[in-house]
Length: 329
Image 1 (cartoon, rainbow, N blue to C red):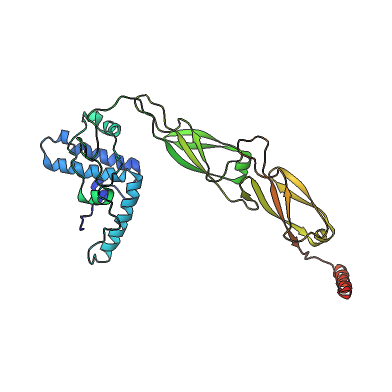
Image 2: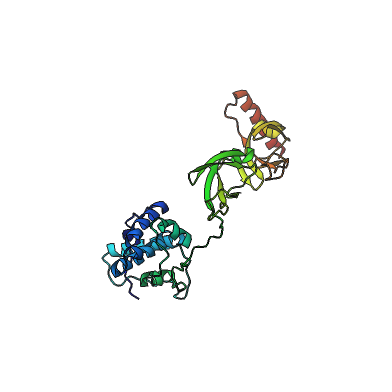
C-alpha cells in the first residue's frame, strides 16, 4: 500500500535530537496557535491542529518514537538512493485492528491549555493513513481517537515514576555508598546498600514526578551499573582472583599474602602446589545484600611465577637436581 510519509519533526519544527521538553514546548506553541477554540470555523487551522497533535502523539511516546525513527531513517536512505520503485511499508505496518496507547492525557491537555481557557476538543478526527498503518487504528470514542474526556477528573492521582541509572565501582558495592542524583530539578541523596548487584534496581518511594490533584509523588527507580574491577571478578556473592607465587613457595610450601576489601589476608600454601590450584577463603567475598554479617567466599587461583633473577649457583643446584631426577627414572 502506498503511503505519504509524515515528517513529524518538521511538522513540530524540532530536530530529531530534540528531548521531550523541547518537543512539548514546540507542540504547546503550535497547538495554541491552531487550536479550534482559537480558530472557530477555520477548517485549515483545524487540520493543522490535527497534524501537530498526531506528531506530538508519536514523538512524546518513547516506544512510538523509536519505531518512527527507524522508519524515518530507512525512508531517507531509500530517498538518497534515488527512491527507485515503491518504498516497502509492509515491514512496518501494524495490524489495522491493533489498539495503541494514548500519549496525551486529559491532565496533560489541561496543563498545556488551561492558561488560554481551551477545553478538550472533539475536533481531532481520524489519524492520517500513515499513522493508522504504522501504529494501528486505536479505539474510536465520542471524543475521537485521542480518547479525551470532556471533563477533567479531580480525583487525586499518583505521579509518574522516573527511571535512571548510576555507575559505581566494585569497592562502592562492597562498602556501600551515597550518591547525589539530579531528578526533575531536585537533588536526591541515594543510599547504595552494601552488596548491591550489577543491574539491580533500587526503588526510592515518592521521589518521582508530582501527583495530580494532591495525589502522592511517583517513585524513582535507579538501575545500578557496577564497573569491572582490575583484579577481582564477581560471581553473585563470591569473588574470584589470581595470586602469583614464586617457584620455591610452590615446591616447598609457605605463606602468601593477598590484599582484599576486608584487609590483607595470609594464605597457607602447601608443598607441591600446582599452578591453577584454587583455594577457597570463606567469608572474604561480597557482603550479602540485606543480610548483616554474612559474606560470600573468595576463590584464589594460584599462578606460579618463575624467578628471573636466579644466581649462577642456584641454577647449578637446580641442574644438579634435574640430573638426579633423570637418573631415578
